[in-house]
Length: 542
Ligand SMILES: CC(=O)SCCNC(=O)CCNC(=O)[C@H](O)C(C)(C)COP(=O)(O)OP(=O)(O)OC[C@H]1O[C@@H](n2cnc3c(N)ncnc32)[C@H](O)[C@@H]1OP(=O)(O)O
Ligand SMILES: CC(=O)C(=O)O
Image 1 (cartoon, rainbow, N blue to C red):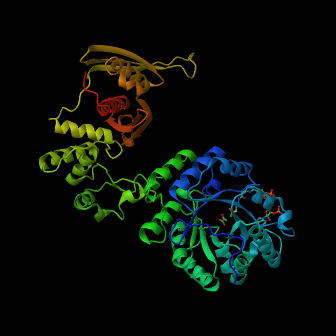
Image 2 (image 1 turned 180 degrees about the vertical axis):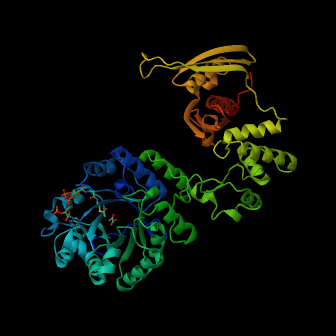
Image 3 (image 1 turned 30 degrees about the vertical axis):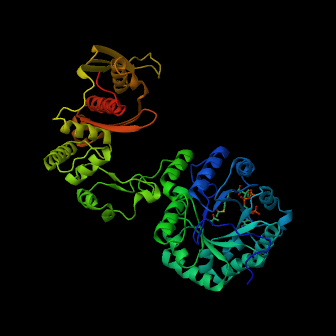
């Protein structure tokens, strides 16, 4: 069987034996709510190249105007070191010739050295969606591949609905694969377009296709059965040498196979890939989340913020001996970090390891560790949550180390706040006022603040009172404020937990306050926030 067009030079693979093909910019962009600008796409492509993927599918030029522009800009702006750009499009239309089809011409005009064609391989789709017959579809595939390969392009064929098509009419699905290889496709990618496959079916089908063809096979899995990564790995085990997926698993409906998870498994566990940027994967996946403006999923395998976060005391006690006892890999391999979470489930080992993470050596101090553990458990029983408020935990730890006192940048004399309802005020007018009286080494200060809501007014008043002594707080900005009612059956007497996230433009930190009064709880979280911020700026109490 002829599997390669002579004119085609295979892509130099940076990986082991399996090629990594990213489709974040095309299939990933088909995710509900995602809308990438051309500049976003260029920025993501640069990050994907840093990750070290072999191919970056940039979009469908000729169909989506932004994608046409992407290829034009990419040629000028991107200096790709690892990856080759692939332009995606369909085979020529039924009854047409590829050189006359404007959509095929747009692929040529994109100047991408790799062209990926989506081709029907399920006879039901051929007859019902394309409204043509099986022979004509085989002609469309062969003619389009031959035309593009003849122009010196590497041609990848995505056999759409391959698995469903194979189960319905295996001979026809295989004939589509064969037609693509015979015409010069370097790779035929078996697509689980509807995402409903299970790993044992993928193993069975890919094994059969492998036995009956000789060209490079790929796998493109959607996640509708929750098995996209497993299906991709099953395909590789059965002989596929090219995998497609998207960073963070973006994609239509439930998404595509998460490419980083797939590649990390193939690299670290199966030795089938060498991804040059794997050790930067966490940063790159998060940077791409920033660009897509879709919050990263903390429980994402390998790169999620919680992927190596340990909460249970028993886990921590074993990790203290050897982190491998509770981790499947060293997080450094994917640029992630092990984190200890302090909570009601903590034991002394959790506190010792968290202390180490924060720069305190608490080893050999069992009484101190016990005191802190007891205090944490009691506070958590009362509504505090330290696994979401590292900064407040650090202040608690410092207080225990300092005989119960802890860092003090100011002494609060009193504070008060009130809300005034004025029917004639506009919607943006401040409706609250707060007064804070406190003392620093520079003397007594009284400050009044206005705000939209009493907490905002208190924040302004506290800043006003401290700014003269500690100008550093000018940079502190409250970036998130969350309130949770802990025992809602108590009605207006319920315990309230407030979590505040603060940033100084470089770092961000989280603090917690608890009380039956939302303003009191907020005040506690606010003062912890200012104290931790000053401490970490290296400021001495003045
Ligand atoms: C599985 C996948 O995710 S594949 C990628 C899907 N991505 C997208 O669809 C995003 C970009 N798509 C588009 O911008 C538009 O759908 C376009 C430009 C491609 C086509 O738009 P239109 O010409 O208006 O056609 P429309 O979208 O209504 O229908 C698709 C046409 O392509 C045909 N078609 C579908 N698949 C193929 C194929 N593999 N080969 C050739 N023709 C195909 C359909 O039969 C239909 O033809 P018809 O116009 O004769 O009915
Ligand atoms: C090609 C493609 O995106 C699919 O079949 O899902």
